[in-house]
Structure formats: C-alpha cells, structure tokens
Amino acid sequence: MKKMKELAILCIFCLVLSLVIIPEKPAVQAASGYKDATSGALHVDGTKLKDKKGNTIQLRGVSTHGLSWFPGYVNNKMFKDLHDKWGANVVRLAMYTEEYNGYCSGSSQNKKDLKALVKKGVKYATDNDLYVIIDWHILSDGNPKTHRKAAISFFKEMAKEYKNNTNVLYEICNEPNGGTSWSTIKSYAEDVIPAIRKYDKDAIVIVGTPTWSQDVGRAAANPIDEDNIMYSLHFYAGTHKKWLRDRAKSALESGLPLFVTEFGTTDASGNGTVNKTQSNYWINLLDNKKVSYVNWSLCNKNESSALIKSSVSKTSGLNRSNLSTSGKWYYDVLRKRAGLAK
View 1 (spheres, rainbow, N blue to C red):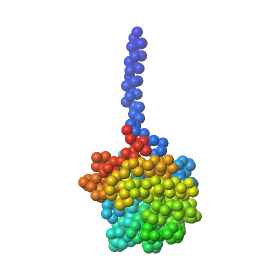
View 2 (spheres, helix red, strand yellow; view 1 turned 60 degrees about the vertical axis):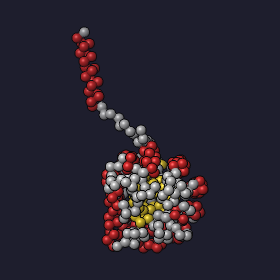
View 3 (cartoon, one colour; view 1 turned 90 degrees about the horizontal axis):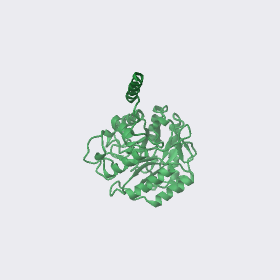
View 4 (cartoon, rainbow, N blue to C red; view 1 turned 180 degrees about the vertical axis):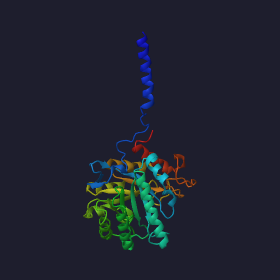
C-alpha cells in the first residue's frame, strides 16, 4: 500500500512538472501560405515568385504614402507590427520623383533626406523579416525617361548598398501615363536594369506598364528579355472591375509575371466609397493565381484609401479601432491569409 501511495505521489509530481516545463503551443500559428523574408532570395519562375527551394511565394503587404509627406510611419515598431500583428510580409517605400518635395523636384537636402529615409525603411524591414520594395514613384512626370539619368544613378547606389540583401526588390517606374508607350517604358527599363544588375545580379526588378500600370497586355506582347523581371498591375476596385481582371488573366495566361505593387479599395482618385465586393473579387483572383499585392496606403490622409483614420495621429502601436473602413478590411484580409485571425 505504501508503495502504491509513493507511486501515486510520483505520478502527480511528474504531471505538475510537465505543466511547468513543457512550453504551451502558440495560440496562433502561421498558415502554410504565410512566408516572410526568412524565405530568402526570390526568383521568377513562369508567372510566379519562388524561393530557392522552388516553393511558390506570395507577397502581401502595404505601401507607404509619399515618403516626403508621411515619413513618420517608417519606424521600427510600425514595421514590426506590420509583420507580427497584421501578417504582412512586404512593405513598399513610395518615393515620389516629381511632386512637391519629390526626389527629382525638391532641394538637394530633400534628396539626401529621402535617400536616408529609404535606407532606414530597408533596415526596419530587414530587421522585421519583411521583403521591401524600393519604389521610384513617377506619377505627374508620366514618362519615366524624364528623369532617366537620376533613376540610373539612384538604383545603382541602392543596388550597390543592398547587393547582399535577399529581401530587396526594385520598382523602377510606378505608373507611366500621359500616353507613354510600352516601347518607351521598355527602352527606359533596358537602361536602368543594367545599373541594378551591375551589383545585384539576381534581384527582382518590377517594371511599370502603360496607362497607370493597367495596360499589361502591351508588355505581354513584347516582354523584356531579362530574368527576374515582373510587371506592375495597379487597380482601384471601385473603378477597375471585371474588364481589368480579364486583362490581368489574359496577361498571366500568356506567361507575363504580374505584381500588384499598388491597389486600393476605392475609386481611382483614392477617395469615394470603399467597395468591398469588388475588392474581394480582386483578392480572390490574386490569391488563386498567386499574384503578390500591396495596398495603398499606410497613412492617415483624409481620403478613403488611407489605412488609418485621419483623426489618429500615432504612427505605431495601432489597434484595429484606429483603422479606417478600408484599413479594417485589409487588416482582416492579411491576418486571415497569414493564419493570424482568430
């Protein structure tokens, strides 16, 4: 009897000990589709991004607004939250070229400040396991050749700086417009890409397409003869509906690798009603085709497409209630696909 009591006590002791020393499983485990920058260098295979093991990688994340206007969101805590809480695996650093205090239109000091902010952004992204897109954000300039020499110089410096990083992607012309032809864009790209390849031979380079990066069919008919090139497709769900989704599907079927480096839930102005129905149609298509996407934009600007309420001034430590209607929708989209949603 005494031995049985001793055995019972020993069993209870072991049970208590196991509860103390065996770690609890995390309450949230990332789904298999959630890959962060620890996946390493990526390459283009057909229409998909893949890691060195051949696994298909889909990047999902957010874009800053213009770095000159909303620099405060580029901080370590915000980027950590994007990865850990939002479930993002990529952030885009949108550096305007021609607008007020743009890289090519502002003062020489402003140019230095923007370059320094881009480098901080890359560091914060790298420290928090995020891929990062360095975006040469042409808009009102329309034709990327307007600042071709400045682009070559900028990307040469960035590629030299980040040649050993495996998480940096280069977007060399955001939204060509104003009737700029694909042949002009392609010629520009064929000038800029060698500046990157001189130092960073295998990095992903993303090239804008005509008409605010919507005419992807023109690029599909005459793609750039280089490896690891992708092509921008931009949409705003309230304006760009089935007709542009059909265009995207056609380009993908022809073998053109697309990357949605910017999209919004609103109309093309970035304002108006948040169209969740059309936004969901788009996200379902992109997920089905494993096309990466980045939402516009991480700021509190008083417009519908901004992710943060205009009344919220903090630039980190955000909770869901701090987000706009569009922000809440996209926050939920990211968390669900990253396996973080309850």
